[in-house]
Image (cartoon, rainbow, N blue to C red; front, side):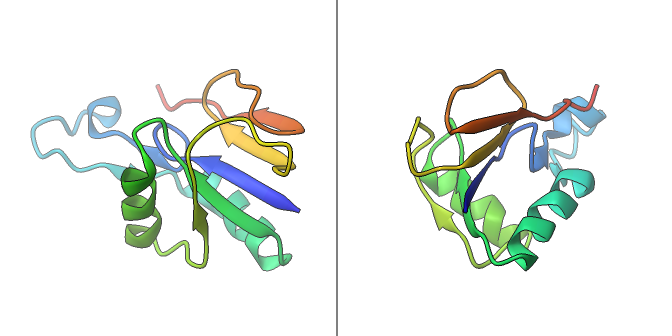
Length: 102
């Protein structure tokens, strides 16, 4: 299966959410990353995408050590089986809303 994960507020917790606005340190969402790694360990095709663009998705995927993965534009695709996002979306056959931190 092809499994897609959004970056902002899904894989990544922005610094402003956790009160790190001064230092600007974004942090990983370890609970969501654990789900990502489980699907990855089962041999699924992993996709990262972001409304902030492919470079942003690639940057954070590499920084959090989520390789191997594919990066693509965040848009509906019939070949994506499951999409994880912090918003109500229609991006895949099955869409899972991840609870935002704060």
